[in-house]
Length: 92
Image (cartoon, rainbow, N blue to C red; front, side, top):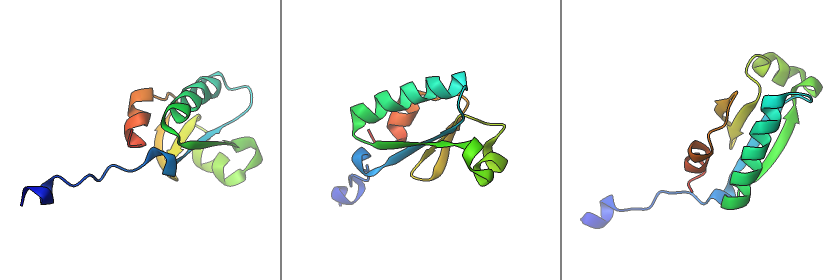
């Protein structure tokens, strides 16, 4: 019976994608990118960058919050990225 409660539901970080939504010339976006690059290199997760100035929908949705970080399409953070929190969200 104990085995029912000890299942490992932790996902593989390499199966995750981190998305950074920002814009050129944004200092906080540059800092967030450094954190994301480092954490993704450590965990094996992939990452991508999207520019709100090139996408009207992203601009309408996030312009006051950039940088915005998504993990597998779900909003994870904005303004500042905590590396430990990101690692945890990736299952690392």
